[in-house]
Length: 262
Image 1 (cartoon, rainbow, N blue to C red):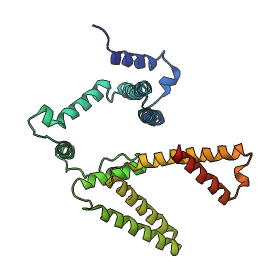
Image 2 (cartoon, one colour):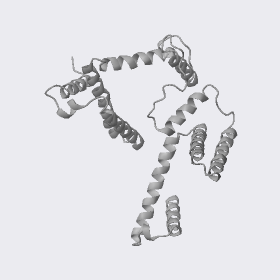
Image 3 (spheres, rainbow, N blue to C red):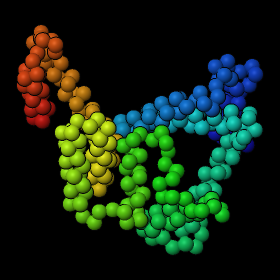
């Protein structure tokens, strides 16, 4: 029987971790691979955004290596192996899709998601059902974490009926920031800024946007325009440090106009 590519990958990683394998690979631990996993995950996201399917294929391979590599280390520890990982996710998918693998009726995505959440809450056997906000990754980027928390609680009705309520809350939080600033209370300013940011994420979510994506897009736009500003100044043999804020603002506005006109 022809060897599958996943089996080939498992054998390659096993060989790298063998006593006569690669010194670097043999030194790695679950903990030391943390930064590699994060880096590879973000590289997958970059490839997804680029639309380059060849790059995406390569980056997904790098990410798969992280799974296989950590499973190999865990196997050496006697904790679990790759088959356990694959079986666990396959079983979970079957369990959480009773409308496909069972006799539960679910004709819409909303019904599917409601069933999914009910099943998740009862998967701990006899334990008390988990809170809706349990299980959110601790290291998830803050904007994404806020979006996920808000999305989860909205599913059970903890949500404004109209967008006007979301906007009113945002304006209320901004007013509280201004009040804290007027009182020069550093602790209150910090807290109210957090509330304002959380409410901004909620407005974005209510309008169907991911705050993490919006901010990244805005950062990219700012960087592009700032580079345009730098290029203009260099072409005029001027230095940033020698320009007043008014001069920089004038160039900035010119860059924006040219960008919108192109």
